[in-house]
Amino acid sequence: MRPALSHEEGVLVLENLNNFYNSFTSDQINILRINPKSVSYDENKLIRRFLGQDRQVVDSSSKQNYVKNGSKVNLKFLEEKIKDSEIISDIIDWIVENEENPELLKNFRKLTPENLSKLNTLSGIVTLKNCLLRWEENLLHSSEDFWQKEFEDNSYVISQLFTSPVTIMQSKAYLGGKNIDNTGGSLVDYLFVNKLTKNTSIIELKTPGTRLLGSNYRNTIYNISAELSGAIVQLSNYKDELLKNYYPLTHLNKGIFHAYDPSCILIVGNFATELDSEEKVKSFELFRQQLQNIQIITFDELFEKMRLLIHLLEGS
Image (cartoon, rainbow, N blue to C red; front, side, top):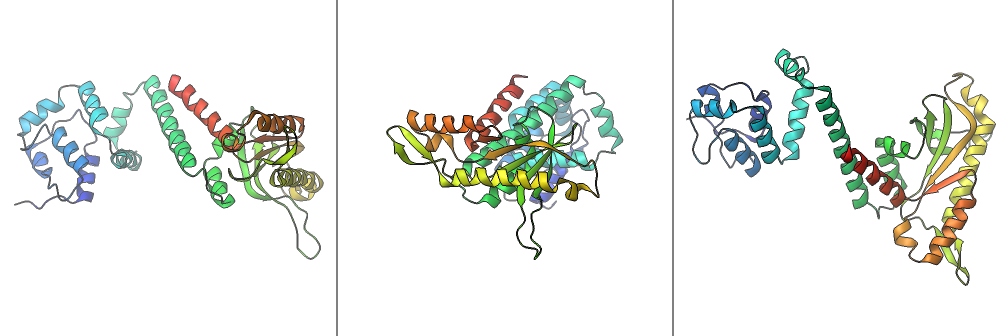
C-alpha cells in the first residue's frame, strides 16, 4: 500500500501538473491518492475534482478524456476551484523557478499580447487591493516606524501623488545640519527623485492618528493642531537643510539628484474620522490651501486615490 501524501508532497504534485494539455499515465494517477488527514479540505477537493473523481479514484482513460476536453474547460475549472491563495502562490513560484523549462516556455509563447497585458493588470490590481486592505486594517496603528516600513515596501503608492514619473531614492535620507560635535542633523522620511529631470521631492510621514485640528478658536473657526504645525515647520527645515547642503552632499556623486526648489509633501492624519463637521472641514481646507510650498494629504485621501486607481485598472 502506497503511503499517504503529506501536505508538502501534495503541493509538489500540483506544481508538477504544469500543462493541462497533456495526458497522464495510470502511474501518475495512482500517485495522486489523497489522505484527507494529510492535506487541507480545499486541497483534497481540488485534486479529487481535477482527477474527475468524487469519492473514488477514476481510471486513467477517464482522466485523459477530462483533460482533453479543451483549454477553456480547464481554465473554467481553475477559475471555479482554485480558491486557496497559497496554491496560486505555489504555482507562480513554480513557474518562476522553472523559467528555463522548454515545455513551459513553449506554452507561454501561445499567450497573446492582450492576455499578457490582462495578466499584468490583474497582478497589479491584486497587489493594490492587498496593500489597501492591510492599511485599512491598521488605520489605528500609531507607530511611525510601521507606516515608514509599509510605504517603503510600497513606494509606488506614494508615487501616485505626483504627475511626473518619480521613484524613491532614499528613505531616512540625511540632509546635513550636523554640529561640529557630530550632533544634530536632519533625516527626512523619504527623498523621491524625478526619473527624467533628477529633481527631488521631500516626503514627511506621520500617522493616521496625528491630530489635524486643535481647539475651537472663535465661533466656527478651529486652530491647527500643534502636531500639524510642528510637522510643517519640520518639513520646511528639511527643505532648507537640503538647499544649504546640496553641494557638500553631492560633490562625490555629481548629477545623482538636483534640488531645484524641491516640492514637499506631508502625509498626516485622517480626514474622515476627525473632520466631522463642515466647520472643521472649512478650517482645515482654508489652512491647507494657503500653503504654497507644502502639500498636505491625509492617509484616507491617499487610500481613496488608491481605490480610484484600482477602479481604473479594473475598468481597463
